[in-house]
Length: 389
View: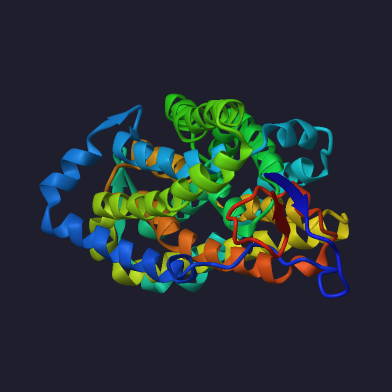
């Protein structure tokens, strides 16, 4: 079976992004909210079990969540044609756009937006202080610190899921993720120290390195060898029509299990602070949409293809909340306002990113199209491809 572009007709001059969704995928946002509720309920009903699972960690990286994220990333990695990643490195525009947005724009808009809302507008509603490292800190400032830790942690794992759902160039997404991962190793500490205005910022280097290796490196290696072995020994037809079909639901199921675990571990913080959750969510929601808009419009002005523009904008909008949560806990404590703010980041990110993915799909016609770059996600994706035996 060979993969070929569908012939272009007057009705298909601008192919749409993605394919026909099954019923489960169509209502993914609903399943996400149900899993968040299930996770919080699990943490309340069985707090000892949630606590024991949460304690299973290496360098503050949760092993149960790492396992779920592996199974979320692995099916995506298997579908990547790694020759596209090599070609993507020769086209630097999307990567440069991602770097500029993530490191020269996003951290500073996050500071401005969070200080405006949490430090000024909502300040009368956020009363009280907390003791951090022997110093009384206002809750508002603690929340701002948590949002900053989110703003300087660009996504390096779940963005592959958003690229997968938006039917974009996974080869280029992989290159962007690799570059962002390296940049975070060198920029996260000094940028965080400066923006937090702290005298000493203990950077969890082991957490950053280990999380990148576990969340990206391990599924990448497994996916590469699985794809290579399958195509060599089983052939493309078996790989695309049988293996990928069986693997299809794994990513989504793993995403939902990840959410259940995250909110089972940290749901107590949410339950105890309902009003503050809403107040923290406002600047995070505005920031996510603003950064997406900036990157997406910039990609349009740079005349990038949709397959490159979508991941560039989605990477900028999303956050590496695992590292942000771990850093907040190490710096300020598990029950701190900063830790709560990073958990709120998880609460709103998945539903908001699903909304932005849908916006990408519906606006794909604004961009030049290179659908041959997109990873084949489902044999039903006949809008972009035809499969010829």
